[in-house]
Image (cartoon, rainbow, N blue to C red; front, side, top):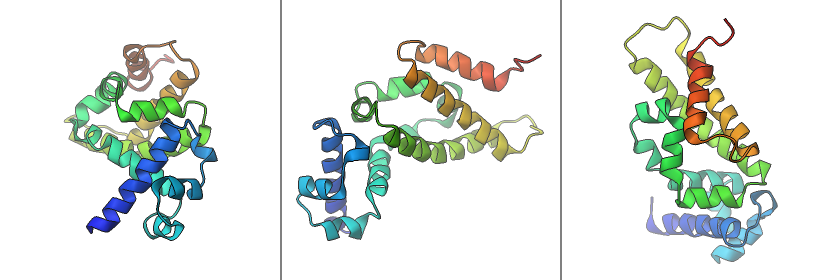
Length: 181
């Protein structure tokens, strides 16, 4: 990717990030024009690089979470909440999430983005296991990720009700034990 394109994309992301974190604007209320004004780029430049503000948000999330995906998949799958808490605490990602607490559209976008990547992780992790699993691997990966997303949404609605360690405990109970027998 050429330098001008990369620089424009970074300026646009930085502008969106600042609007959300420093100006405390909700993602759902921010317009492309506001992003372009903040980045000091023309609207046509925005559309050369991004289809819409949702693709810009995905780009930014990828930038913020790049190191997260470098962590061993076992750690991310076996202790998803403890590891996430450790990784995100005090980070730019944490700052972004805190600033958007009341924006459901932001969380829907972030969840969709995260689920797509977590499903790949879960599938990779499941296929690395030595024991034979008689459930289709893609179904099992989908189930694990859905449990993580559900617990995350529950925790966001019930702040301070469960620690990351408690969420990991709930996660393991839900996905690894037959709680209905």
